[in-house]
Image (tube, rainbow, N blue to C red):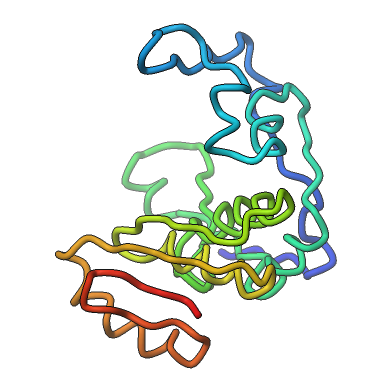
Length: 187
């Protein structure tokens, strides 16, 4: 059983589970001081909007229109009932999962990559360098940079390089190129 939303029914907000926890999560610790990390510690790594979201207790966080426009390329994705899993577990509970295989990377990673690249671009970051294993994260960053006109440089582990070459042929038509130095570059 599958449930589909119409594009106009797609969420306009991110749901923040922290608002519904009975106890707040413990903050991450700084690797050197072993004290809770503050915004000043995260600022060299993340745009301020992402830091605000990370510490927010708000239940819903608005998804920017630009991000939603990119999500519309492949979302909303169907909600699927896992009846065979329910039977295997002998449970009366209904179990559902979101099928994210229709995204450009074939996984859920595109969802967050688009948002993170967008917030970086909003703060003036013009180039994003990232590592990707099987390619979903790098593909997600690549999709977002096309809209934001930023440049992306994605490195890959050598063991994944040859496996990824096949996918590069698909992406090469959109400006992606694989290099022998285990990298995937966007021009």
